[in-house]
Image (tube, rainbow, N blue to C red):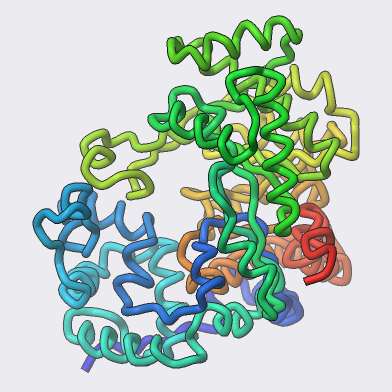
Length: 482
């Protein structure tokens, strides 16, 4: 018999009884609001094909780099978690079967005690799969069999899960060389779920990316443009952005190493681009080109209305051996220090005072919240702050974000919460966590007599629903006939 699995109704609420009571009242008003998930990385083929998930390993382990990185840090091989190496994909040695991988997770579930991953998993196990005992070695097979059986039911197919989770809007993220066939299939279907895409052009902007040259070639084939010419290259971006908008996109996303922007002359852009496409790129040229392209993307956003997001500061695939053998997104990305004030000035000098541009800033460098990001967003009409991101979308991270940005940027220069996840079943758990922490923060302001409870409730509703919907122009996503 395993330990009981019970989710306390007051989890993440303040320890102080009076504040806890206020937080509970606020939360009860927002917990049932629809989920707006405007930035994430779920697979659009799940919704286009609407096939059942196969087993718990494929659903909960394989796509979740939070799980993989913690287990790997303890010396557990990814192959033993059912993750194939590049050679195994092409017919090499087999990886662990799903049940064995699941047993290995269960044996090591203690590694996630106190982490947001552990919090999300227990929410999924209890609220979605109705488990009543904690996952451990003694319950591993029961979990695997029970969840596998449930996953084969019609109500656990992706579209039904989307509706069950009360998701009103969900955005995936695709490359400009994606054909968008899954999103087009969704647009042509009779399902009313709002699953759209976001334009992530890094593959054809980052000259240091290992697939840059071949991606650029395919970019030209998709758009019919000579993308080795600066003018035609920009036109190719405009065409692809229009393609993305046609299947519902409301945002672009830019995962550059830094937040650097530039404002070069046309002649300077042409000279730089000639060096970029000649495949003789220095690190300085690659950085300058990324910087210039952020400014170009902002200019295009003013033309086509896409909200612009910058997600800088991750040293991606830091573990070279892991990348060479397993590929990207296996938990080896590491945060870096990021500077914003000087880096963004060239772009802001061009467009910072234009309220028709929405530029949402994220960071993995929390030291920037109070020093740079909140003052920038608290001044420039085009800027908004994205929520605590990636390594910091935890109860403590969300609270630090509110404590360090509210004094200068307030609540209404932020955009609510987005889950940024590849793991579909964690979406309600992540949004529930954010709503609980925001209500706890607001309750503290009420108890300190810095905020009336009625105002706190209005803010809680805005943070949970209205701000992400407004900031990402969700009402524009499903324009036209379906």
